[in-house]
Every structure is written in structure tokens, then in C-alpha cells.
Amino acid sequence: MTILRSTTRVAAVAAAAVGMFVFASSPASAFSQSWGSGSYHASGDFVPSSGSIRIGGSGCSGGAARSFYTQLVKTSGSSKVFSSYSYAADGQYQTDPRGIGVSTSTSYYLRWYGKNNSGSDASAPCASAHTA
Image 1 (cartoon, rainbow, N blue to C red):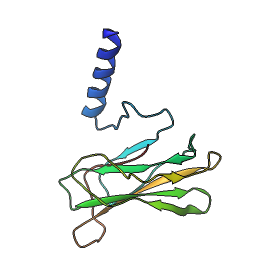
Image 2: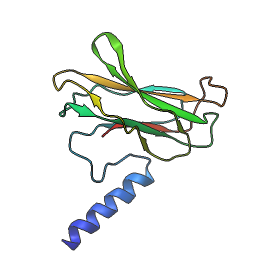
Image 3: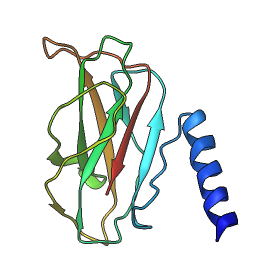
């Protein structure tokens, strides 16, 4: 048991050191993607394994972006399904508390948007989006 805990801890620390986002206790169906600098990012496609998900993300401090939000988008037709609340671009991971009903046979992707204090597009040095 000690070896497993140590290995898990080392993997989490190593992932954090290279800027990866790791779900330590999330279900296997969780999806995440990280990016470098930018004001807009779109993730790869994924198919949820649960009929209800939540979305969120993070935005690093140090850029012009003061806040960010994420969107869940249906791949077919690129139709927006849901937008998260806005959160501070302070490096903290945030997850919108509202559940979203999704189809387990439909492909989706996530969008990440950085905004400045006046609501205009703004870049953050790094960003991520995830499902929970």
C-alpha cells in the first residue's frame, strides 16, 4: 500500500510540475485538456460515459485575462449546450456546480474563453478545461 501511495503522490507532483491537470479522485469518465497561452481554446472531442456531467477549468494569472469561462459544445453542428459561470483567472481549478444532461452516444468538446475586466477577449499564460 505504501508503494502505491508514494507512486501516486510522485505522479501527481510530476504532473503538476509540467502543467498537466490530473483528476486524483474523479471517475474514469472525466475528460481534461490543458493549453498554453491564448484567449480561446477548443478541446478534442469526447463522448461522456455518464448522462450528467459538470464542466470547469482554470486560467493562469499573469496575463491580460482576469476571468474565464468554459462551454460544452455538441461536436455535430458545433451547437453550444451549456456555459459555465465566470471564474477568476488565478490558477485555481473551478467546476461549475450545475449538472448538465448529456447523451452517452454523442460527441462533445469544450471551449475555454479568457476575458479582461471590461469583458473583451484576453489571453492567459495557460488554461485548462475539464468535465467532472
